[in-house]
Length: 105
Image (cartoon, rainbow, N blue to C red; front, side, top):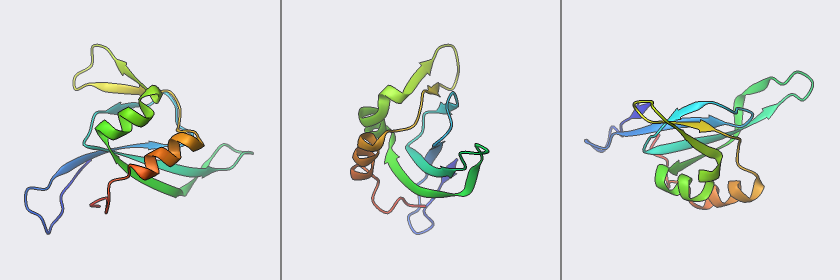
């Protein structure tokens, strides 16, 4: 997804999303990653439509903190990364500290 801050011309940026409970998704590289922590019903495995918490992190910061959760997939253009899981509590805290101030969304 590409976003633009209407108050700052030329401020376009791309965002890709990783929600909790998802694994094996192929995400494109983007300017930012939105990590969405969802509530999942343990009986049905269905996630609620509203995220419990969302953290927007610049791609380079996300790769430094949570890069172990992404595996590059060879031979795809544009580049894609297979998700291997969702951040644990310690990684989530580090992502929150690195969050993009005022996400721009």
